[in-house]
Length: 461
Length: 92
Image 1 (spheres, each protein chain N blue to C red):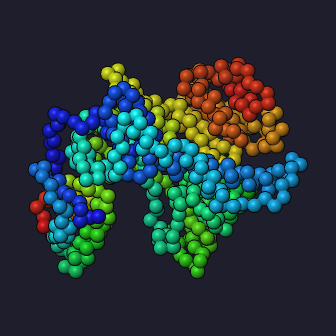
Image 2 (image 1 turned 60 degrees about the horizontal axis):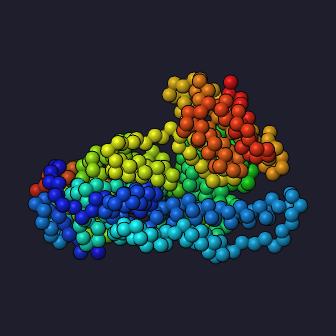
Image 3 (image 1 turned 135 degrees about the vertical axis):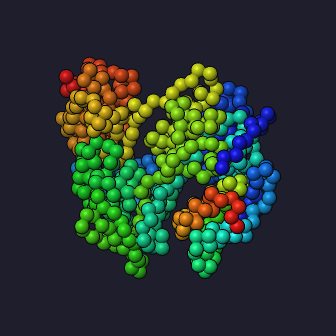
């Protein structure tokens, strides 16, 4: 039964934000700079997932892993001989910790306080639509933003818990590498960790339930990444499911079903990267905020079904990226602060999976466009045709651009050593409705990887 | 800790969380769907324990939260009993 709550006449705050990650922090700074009385609630580490457990530490580790791999495996191709290349994981962790520290999250409380933002440490739980319980106090606010992010989904696999496993929270802090590892999950996180541990020299098996890795990307991206992983010694199983885990002394025995085939893998460690679930355990039932298993439902202004409560970031979707969360946070803050409302648009969201080469994309995939009934024009070019590929001795990758019949770019994929940076040119084009010929007519420096973008765009007639 | 949790009642006042009430409600819901006494006790024990974990770090929750979440946990053991717990406020 829904209980009607009377709106208070006085409030402790103008805005309380639950969650200090990208979805919350950006809005906190914006509202505070406009003179609003703001509090931010955080039960864990200030800054949330990205700087503490996600993007930042993984990219720092990846840098170390690729240096190690390149020094020992790649350098000799160029006449560079590095002898006695070795790995000290304690030092690697120290480097990772330094990168995390430099994001400033460790001083996060002070940074918020310096701007007059109150940090409330503890779990936030709505008691009424206007009251949030944190610690042993209750706070009222005129408006709220819920930016509570996600938690790991642990698949209900028989024996998994008793055999033991790690998630990325622990994987980023290993000071001793396992000899062998099985990664459950072939999305962006599972694929990045497969790449990371493979470059560190761990024997990796990756198991994905979907028919291909990186299932949200173009099929040819999945094919190429799987082929490169297999070339590098990763054992990839797609369309496969871990159904049981047992122990055999120190080893974990992972039982995998792939169609009618049954496989057994004896590994030292299991990394679970099987997806995320929204953190909606904060008394939303007491507020009138609607949510589903996919997250909190909002309109394009990031407003929930309770008009004074907004929601942003991974707890909303449709993409779980830091840049998505900060974008939504800006939208929510603007709409809280101004009468003239703005709406979120997701037609040019950049995505990047940090493998080597990187898999980066923006806008619609070819299949998505066709499903929407768009008669697309498509052009793909391999990066091997450009000068930089020759001078770098790296030929695996391609650029694929997708345009509407008018020639307006609506999506693109780049797989290349600096795919993430290259894709931004396409993101700019898609965001601004540029035509492929506009990009093709732009002079691109020689010899850069980005020449492949120009050549692909020139192929759209 | 669970014993420092407070429940905000519908009328607006608060009272300390009493896990015996949860136990009694779950037990009664199970008995209402003709579970055996032994099963009802076992399930009530498990749900009470799971509620303790759920309440960890939460200082205040509403009585509505308690009912909703106890029903969510109970659903794992008995769907019908969970429905009764969620929809009949006076069960205990």
